Length: 334
Image (cartoon, rainbow, N blue to C red; front, side, top):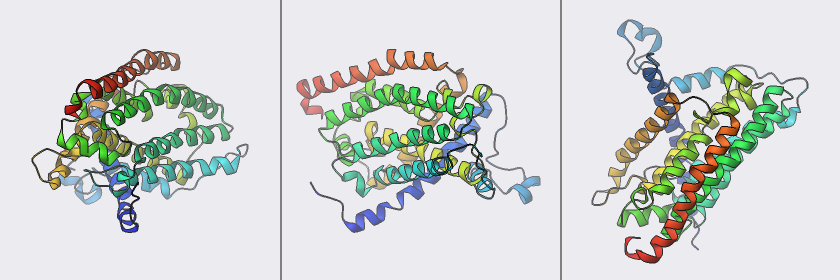
């Protein structure tokens, strides 16, 4: 097994920066599309000329401005909280997403993605994020934080099952746990979105739950439990949590493109063409998730668990069975 070189690892350290700004753009798209679907304006893409002296030309980076504002504020720790765990939980989640971003290809680029177990590494690191939120909420000593952590733990079991099964269905079809190898297999054949749509749908629904978009935002149900696990967070610690969420959406979307859409590669075109293709595919995926988020009411936690068992998990298992059958009966396609 060939390990990435030192230069390759160093060059991959720039990927988290790219992923962060992709997450900012995706966050803006979620806000803007949600607002328009609800007959609101949302953040301006182009600010009216009369306001540009104050607000600038565009508010495309509004999610970034919100994070910067929080970074300038003081973090207050609840007196009854377990302060060490409460303070460290956001940083644990941040480390997980930064390392995961280095392994997740952006427009097919990531030297670390060629590592044979890169898919397993990404899935484990993404699993660390909800664990960190659960610990932080439980350590806050807030009843809303404890209830939110309990809901997060239950929902995590629901969405992680189809997500992992769907991901390994694709690994089975590509005969590799390397994300780069999975992309390369699709580059010479058809994308796995067409070869295994069952796994694709299951994976997409799973990441909607992972991102806490409706109808699966039960851990942070504002009208019920304020903000769930992050209720007692503010200032710089809340900014770290918002940075984690920004990374998380970019990583989830990038992983979906890598596993099911060949990382943005288009057969017959130069690799550079994958950059605009990747961006377009990412925006379309976020558009679909935002429409689901905006047009659906929130599930209760029991409804979410039952629905995940009955629909995405069954789809993911069917996709895994299909993957084994496909490799046996149609090996020429993969």
